[in-house]
Length: 182
Image (cartoon, rainbow, N blue to C red):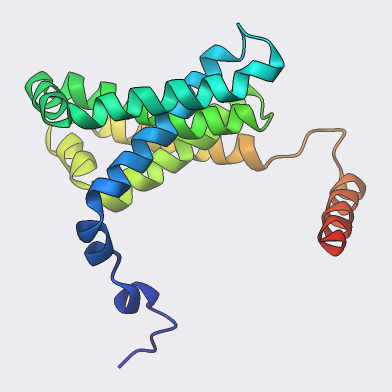
């Protein structure tokens, strides 16, 4: 029998935890989503001392409203079919994109990082999407998505002309100094 260190999800069993606390997980994800969306939109229009409480209160109010009307929203997205699925993916992509932008990442790098996360999630959780595309003779779409995935990885990882080994070494050294202070 393989070691439990190699297969930690066999010991933890996240599916049982998610099924037991699914309502709380759903509410937390909705809350994070609305806080990030309200943070993206409200920071541009209000002064600094009042922005954080406003963002949290607007995000909390929207998430409570969505949580109360969850059944109706699910029916709407199911009724919309593929358009509803695309809309849901775009809405969910606003969470990591908003976090990346909030931490000061440039817009193009935040997009690439969000695409990498969603491509990996789609392959691990919903591989039927890619098999469906292949069955419908849309192999070029699969190929384009794969190429965009590798381009995104390249754009995130590559270092510019002014970022050589010395700069990378200084960044690592600075990170080590930061850890020592804690």
